[in-house]
Image (cartoon, rainbow, N blue to C red; front, side, top):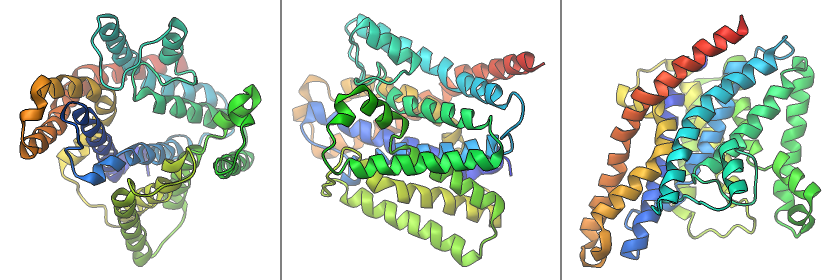
Length: 360
């Protein structure tokens, strides 16, 4: 099945984006009002990033899984990924840069040195977070694309072995993070290993595994239902306990959220393969616009939090703060739809035509 055939993937992308928006609205509103205005489970909204990573691995397997060992597979794959990620990201980052130079602080944006700016635009790994806050996840996306693109030069069997080795290396870094290994953060070699085998790679690779299972393996209905039920239950548990759980590693999100994300993606895809349900168009649309949502929501949140709370935030009731926060969450999405239709889609069409021209 093609990537487009899985509407459940788009729905999960919309859910992931919504969870990130809930987290950031709570963080932004907490500054003026002094407490978290949304339900406590939204503090774990960063699971949206982990779901995104699993979905990315799932989609990349469906997109490139038949290209291993083919001529020009690497260059074509990387070109398509470059055109998918960078143009809209550059536009959003340019807006954040202009705002920063004008003295307007955009939520989760960081304006520092010229070198920091250049690395941010190119999505080159660095110790500091990117100009546009959500861009840090794209650094890991690019790392995954480059690694997967390089394996496309190999025959399928050897490529899979390299990907499995990459997964074990990433698991090793995750396990070492529970102990004291100062050389991993204090030496160039250690930082390089830490980045190449970053534990988030496990989420990309498990997403690829989920796609392989859906494409190759036959399962029973009870297994399909059980996987999705377990994924939903484990997600609910980690979201409810996220604030109280203390994981002794800087990769606590990977530790907590990887398995639930994998089970959600795999279970949803297996059930869709079996029953081929029709999803509400609005749910699919939220997934379609998720990249626009991810890059633009910090600007909408900044503007709406200022308007909703302002300098007299302390005079508002908890009920007002809750409903205004939810209104901000809702308000993010019409802006995302407009950006998707007027900017992202035209960029996609331009990229498609340009890629086709270069491939001739």
